[in-house]
Length: 424
Image (cartoon, rainbow, N blue to C red; front, side):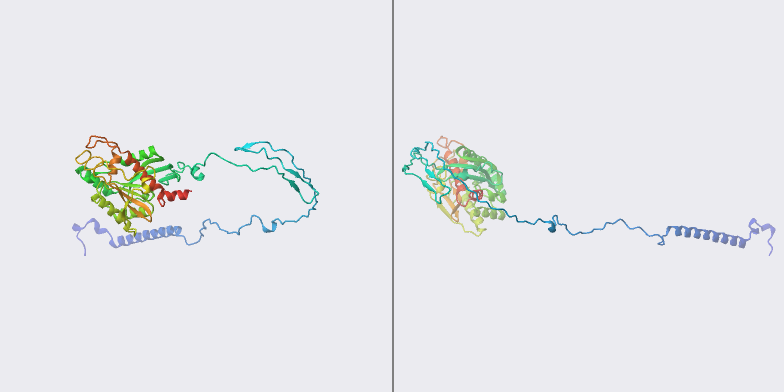
C-alpha cells in the first residue's frame, strides 16, 4: 500500500530488520570479547598447582644421651706401694727445771717441787719418784657465789631480737624478781561495738562512756610506769580489734569498764586467745555484780564456751603470786573513787572499796582477772582532788598494773613464756 507523500516522514526510509540484525551482531561481538578478557584474566590469577609452595623453616630437636663428666673407664685405680719399715730408737731425757714459787687464791705452792723422773730407753719399766713433799692444805674463800641469771640468757640480747615478730620477750632472775629485762609492745583490744557504746555513753554522760574516750591515756601511763620502774623497754604499739589474729600474740590485754556486745567471730578469737596462753585484765568499775561485772563475766563465759571449756570464777586470795611478782601488795590497791564521779557526792579514797579480785584459771594458769577498784580511772588521772580536797596518789595503782604485766609475761604457760622456751 502506497503511502501518500503528504504523510511520509524521515523514518519511512529506515530498514528496521537491518538495524536489528546489526545491533545483535555488535552485541554478540562485544559479549565475546568480554568473555575472552575475563577468561584470560582468570587463567592468570588462578593457581592450578603447577608450582610447589616451599615449606617454612623448621628445627629438628635431637635428644642426646647425657654425657658423663668423668668416664668410668678413666677413673684412677689405687696402686699399693710397699714401704720398708725401719725400727728407730728414741732417747728420752727428763726435764729437771724447777717450779717457780707462786701463790694462787691464797694457796702457797712453795711446798711443791719438781718430781724426779728417771727414764731409761733400754729399760722395760719407767720409774718415777714423786717424793713425799706434798702436804694437805685447806682452800677457803670469803666471797659467796652471787645469784645470777643463766649465762646463756646473759648472752641473749633481747633488744637485738626485737624484730617485730614477737610482742614481748623478758628474762627474769629466779632468785631476784626485780632483776628482769626485756621488751614489751603493749596493745589494747577493742570491738567496733565498744567504740559505738563509748561514743553514746560519752555524749549522753552515761556510765558506759568510760575507757577510750574518757580515759585515752590509761594504758600509756602504765607503759610510762613500766619504763620508769623496771628494765623492760615498753611502748604502746596499737589498738587491736578482738577479731585480729595479732591478738593471739599479745600476752597481756586490758579491757576497760565499758559494756558492749561481741560478735561470734570476736568471741571465738577471744576464746582461742585465752586457751593459747593469753591474759586479760578487765576493769569492772567499783561494783561487784553490777552491769559491767555481769557483762565481763558473760563475755568470758561465752568466749570459753565456744572453745568447749567451762568457766568458773573464783576469788583470788591476797597472797597470790600476782601480788608479789614485782612489787609487794597485801591485796589490790584501794579505789580512788568510792562513789559516782570525781569529787562528786559519795566519792573519796577508801570509801566503798572492794578488797579482792575475781579470776578465771585455765589448766592451772591464771588467765583472767576482774578488778573492782576503778583501775582504769586511776591509771588515767595522774592525781586529782577528791571530796576531801586532797590529791589522790595513783602510784600504787600503776605499780599493781606492772605486777599484772610481769605476772602475765612470766607465768608458766603464758605466750611469752612459750616464746622464751623456743629462744632458749
